[in-house]
Image 1: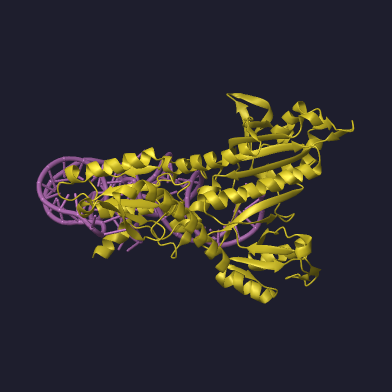
Image 2 (image 1 turned 90 degrees about the vertical axis):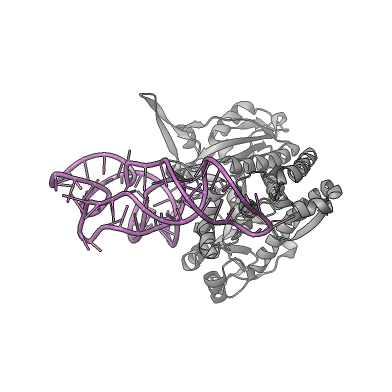
Length: 484
RNA sequence: CGGGGAGUAGCGCAGCUUGGUAAGCGCGCCUGCCUUGGGAGCAGGAGGUCACCGGUUCAAAUCCGGUCUCCCCGACCA
């Protein structure tokens, strides 16, 4: 009978229906809610706090590596977008257009930015004249609109928030160096702060950014064993500088076009946090980005307001002073058990319980969200113990995810085996690929798997094998997976 | 964009086949009492333009047409 009651408020188990679990958990935990316009969502305070943490931690890295923030306009003249043909072909199906200002029809339509290469290119042509002006290292935090046909909260929404870096350099080598430096910055950021292990590499021509020379990506395996693109870094070469006429006089007094890069990560990272770490009880956030790192639940028993609450409050202020994001749940209307479930669902990494028995023993109980291990902690060591536990949770969440990634990564040279893995177990499959997009296409048609990344393997470590699809000799190894 | 499913209280749903009696259930919410170490109990109470627009009818949550949104599976997509 209690089983029935519990079932009502519980979310759909992840194993039963992953999609349903995903949307339910996002709404129940109040990360986001659907907005009245198709494909758009409201990021609620609890979810937005995570975005603020991501911004804070990534912005620091962006600035430390020499970049500065700026802000470019939301609207882009249609003629700008059309200058780079590949670019416009790539984005035109998903651009939203402004056609009127008030009642007046505009002479030229304005695109709501689907990305900012075009406006920024236009501005760079005015700002850059000499090699002394280079490199230009600018980042912007902004919103983006892409008219997507299929949308899902955080993973793909009509409007989303992101960061886009746009740099200009003297030569190809410097642009390439920047592209790869950013890629490894993203990898380090995602693995350290979000506790999500990624694979990194180059995108195939089919999957690269519209208008780029080369696109590099970090990809992670979600817990339903599908891959998610977490961030990309593009070497744009001179494509945009040629069409936007971004020229400079180089050190040898020759006039030439700059070499550019662009790179971004978006609110999709929040979706990744949900799918990589969540379980049947709900969300699970790594402490570094968790909106609430520690929740204190006083056991409201007997005369608890006099006997227990003051201690709980003291714990709260001690932790707050030592920089921990802590919340004291002193609501009277809920039982402790209810609160336990509630905060687990919301993904709080550490819970501290304090009850009459603990007061007697001068201790409290600490419960980890990831392992659910309970341990008693003496009051005296609270301030030392909590940061230590949080650090450990951060680390072991990464290790758990890495273990999952490894045990769901396969390597095969047999196409039948490849197919059967994609059919049954799913996950990442490493296989040799000839580099031909026809093979890539064929594999996609037959297995639904796409090439997520071609890992960057140094020449001397390469070996030569047969393409999984056509059998041609090749030294290119690729990661295949079904993807979001 | 194609195929399928759905929209009734904050959430999950029943009612629709056969139009009228009935806007109903569980959870949540409010008030009070009592409880509180893993989603307590009792009593009372509030809450609905039945997604929207139009049509048929004496009468529509229920029948018909259209629109919007969400979910699932494809196609497409940094």
